Image 1: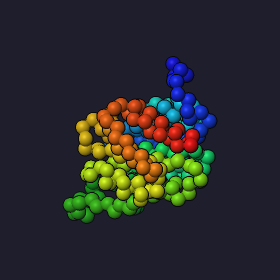
Image 2: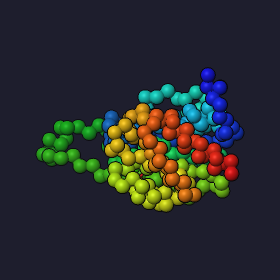
Image 3: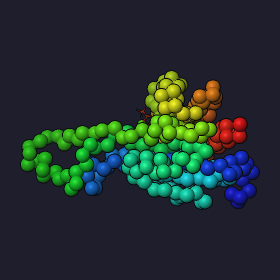
Image 4: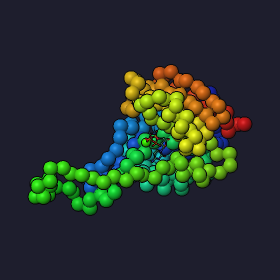
Length: 230
Ligand code: CTP
Ligand code: CA
């Protein structure tokens, strides 16, 4: 049935998509992560394939099936996602960075399991963990981008959506920002639906109401296909 998907405007195009959360180890059995389900990124990868693209999906851990016909690379940490993206971005006509990369990681993950008894032995009431920022993959891709390559980033925000998204669009040096107000009911993390403000460096401003993540993926890919066609 998917072969009958009517729009093939990405045929012959190579698209790199990232999806899901990343995990940053605290010790061999624990990690820091976030609420991303991967539904948005997987929907983009699946629909890009239906539209005829050759798709590479770099994904953090999710409960989702890899999309049919999509080359899927599984990673855990932000550094692994960075490496996979740098490996594959050179050949991509467009990169859509839908992953929720963990922003911070424990600076020195413990090589062995952290034991409660050790805290008690040191009569320490708190376990404190020093965190350092993870590499900003999107910014690095923007610095290394080749001429004509389209870069799409996401923005998860909780304040003035448009102002924060405009700042991110400029700061990241990307072509399009898909901004989500993650406090809005039915939008953002874990949901099957999403609402977004699409802001483009070319002046694009599209307010997408609460729709399925597939429908939002279509709007993003329509924009990408139109830009690549120009
Ligand atoms: N991103 C990335 N590498 C990171 C963090 C984020 O590539 N280490 C990407 C995300 O995939 C997304 C975009 O940058 O496409 C914006 O992510 P977001 O979390 O909204 O913004 P940050 O730049 O991380 O800033 P903050 O979370 O502080 O708002
Ligand atoms: Ca972030």
